[in-house]
Image 1 (cartoon, rainbow, N blue to C red):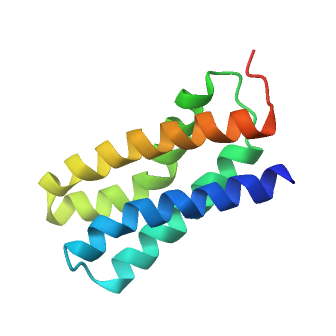
Image 2: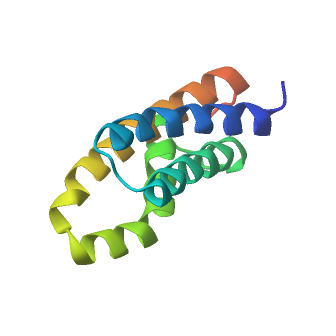
Length: 109
């Protein structure tokens, strides 16, 4: 399977994982759709960006880079909400980096 398709599919899976607790918390649909779209894009970027670092770290860095503009908006109104957002970004970003690297057989060294 194409690396871009693998990245996008696993990004969508991460988006679903991230959105489930948001639905339980009854957050707005625009927030849910935004989170899902963000993770889909992150999965794609992890699969195409070439960084010579460990895959887990690559996933985390790309995830935080994509999250940064949203984090500014969210943190401006509710800084405490950045804690769970950051935790999910570390976990899902690292998992995406690791999984996509394993499935696409990319080397980082």
